[in-house]
Length: 322
Image 1 (tube, rainbow, N blue to C red):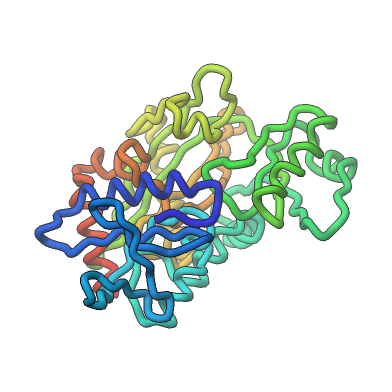
Image 2: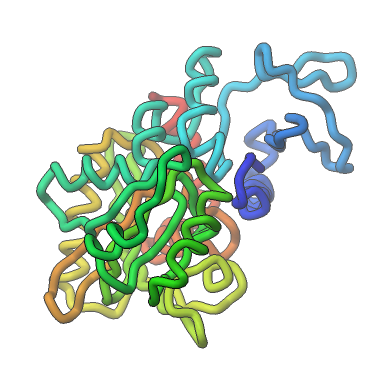
């Protein structure tokens, strides 16, 4: 848990939730915090023991502890972008998420959108991908996409540094803010509609497509931004109160995308449904979705009759079988 991005604290919440939920009589559990300054094992009395990155081990009471499995709960860099997955692949250690290639692709919103669009099974909003090393043409962006638009880091999550831009004067400040979080920024066409999420998970040869959730921002929050997600300014309705046909469409597309993108572990797909045009648009894939007490995927699993503890047990068993 932890990580190098603005999602560090959210990741700690997810890791703590999993650590507190799993049966410590069944598993030997260790909390490993990934930080830019150090990687360390956090003991129950909050002591920090250094992680040996040569073999991802920890020395406790003069005994070297090595691990059978990494339950990856690092949102963003380096846990969701393929870096940790590649590291564990080289060590020959199993983990609970998608593999290196899928993680790297799906983490990059711009690249992933092009791949998903090529599948031809769901709409993808028009967008412009910007690079920090290149000159930005705001007039060209607005001519291509119009207003309003969403500006977001191309490699980031939890809506960190994400802005809904309604006028041209606000475009460059939003782009600069997003560049503070990522070397690449995506400016995306605004689709007015309802936001839905759907979790998918394969375990023991069976694929679970969870009931969908609708995200309804409250108050002054116009979209599911960081504050709406984590400070109670949204309603997350599970199962979503929506036409059965729409719910089925979202579940069927999520089911297909899970396979087409070669996903593993617990994955969440996000969409916008344009209620006027009655068209569904793909937003993004979350290969390390939040697992804090109020996160979306555990709620979806519970709505399906799977307890949170059982969900995490299944994630571990599936990863050890791969």
